[in-house]
Length: 486
Image (tube, rainbow, N blue to C red):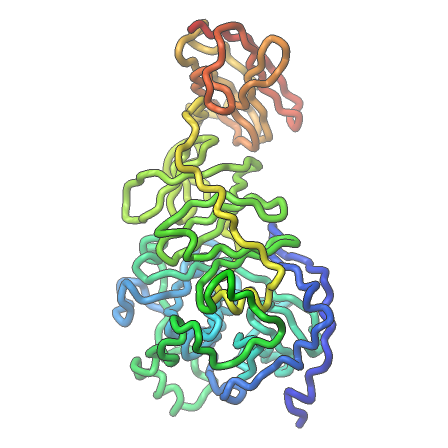
C-alpha cells in the first residue's frame, strides 16, 4: 500500500475562490500558488489516528455539565437556532469532532499548537456526513486533517483547502464559531447542549475508549506552550512571520473576506471593544470582551448600521446600540429593544489564531488600525418605530404633528407592502439635509420623531422644509411640507 508521502504530489493552488455563503469569507491564496505545500508536511510525532477524532459524541444540557467550570474554555457553535458547546479540552486530545447540528453535519476542529478553533460544513453533495481524521502531519505547526472517504486527501486546517488527491483545490466552507468560557457561552445561549468527554469513539478499541473516560487525560498536555513565546515544538516553513509587530503567541481574531484579510490583536482591543470596520466592501462589527471576539455583519434588512457601546441590563458584559435606529442589541447579536427588536446580526465565519501561525500562512494580512470605535454617539435626531400590528391597505404619508413645531415633530406613514423605502428631509432648494429612514421595511404603520437635526446632529435653521417618502421598488412616492419655528 502506498504511503501518504508517496500519494501526495506537487500542488498548484489557484487564486480564485468561490464562496458558498452569502458573504465572501474565503481569503486570498495567491501567495501559495507556487508553493509545494506537500513538501512542507512534517510528522507530528504520532501516526495517523494516533490522536483519535471524535464522531457524533453524546451531549448533556448545560445544567448537567458538572465536568465543566464556568471559567473553562469552550468552542461554541450556534447554527439554525441550535447551540452546542465543545469543551476546549476535547480539542487538546482529539483535535477533530465530527458532529451534526440540526440538519447540517459539521466538523469542529482545534489545533492546540496554533490556537485555532475552526468549524467547517461537513455535509457532502448527497447530504451525507463527511468524516475527518487526524493525519499526524503538520504544516507550520498546524493540524492537517485527512478525508476518511478516500483516506488520501489532506486539508491543512488554517487554509481548509485540499492539497492533494482527486479533490485537490477544493475548499471547505468555514462556519461561525465563538471561542469563550463556558460561563459566557451559557449567558449567550442558555439552552446550549454540551459535548461529553469519553464519547464519540466507537470506531476505536474498547481499551482506548476506556482510557478516555478518565477525565484526568484531558489536562492541557503542552505545559507553558501557550504563553512562552520562545517555546516552539515544530518550525514554520512556508514563510517567516513578522515578530516585530506582535509576539509569537499573541492571539488575534482573523477574518478573511473577499480579497482581504484582517487581524484584530487581542492585546490592542483592551478589556472590551465595539469596532465598526469595513473589509473589501463588507461592513463588519467586532464585539470583544476579555478574550471573546465575535464578528458580525453590520447589514440588517438592506441597511448598514453603526454601533456603539452602552450600559445594558442583564448578565452579558457588552451591550450595544445602533446609531441609525437606536435599537438595543445584546452581545449575542440580537436586538432586544427598539425598532429592530427581534432582528439578529449575521455572525461572520472567522477564527482565532496565534500571531505566528496567522502571519506565516497569511503574510499579506492587514492589521486593524485602531479606528471604528464610537466613544460618544451623535445625538438622536430621528427615531422610527412601528405603531401597530394592523396591516394598512394603502400607501399614506400623514401631515406631521405638530406643525409648525419646536423642538420636535412626529411623522407617520402607512406601508401596505414589504419593500425598500427612503424617507428624507429636504430644504426648499431640493438639497437633502437629513435621511430619516432607509432600507427594507416590513408592511406596517410607522411613526418617526424628528428633533430638527441634520445628519451630523446639528440643529437646522428655522424655516420650511419638505419631507419625502418613496419606494422605487413599489412605485410609491409622497411628500409634504413642514415648518420649523425656533
